[in-house]
Length: 101
Image 1 (spheres, rainbow, N blue to C red):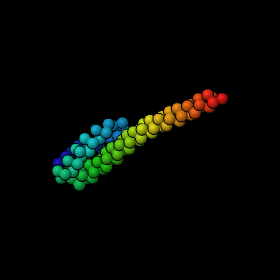
Image 2: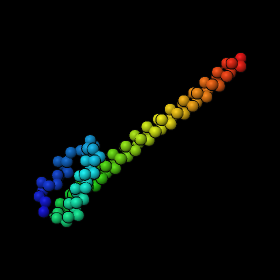
Image 3: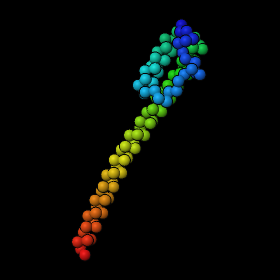
Image 4: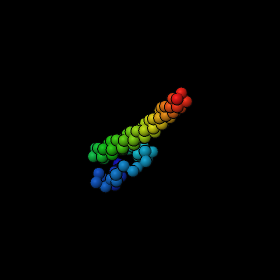
């Protein structure tokens, strides 16, 4: 069985905000292995499960943030392409109008 030191207490846990996605997933994998091994007491299992939920939520948040960044980057590219097309066509139309005068 794991000792009380094996699972950090909630008040001792550092924030997961700055933890890398890969680190979150690796730790979550370890928690799942502990739970699957069934070598923990009920209280330890509950603590491990709680930690796993926190890790999963933090990893999901990190993925959502990455998705938003990708979306912003691709929208920025599309917006820039649109501006160039608009500016290019408007510029040509203005040039034609100037030549017609």
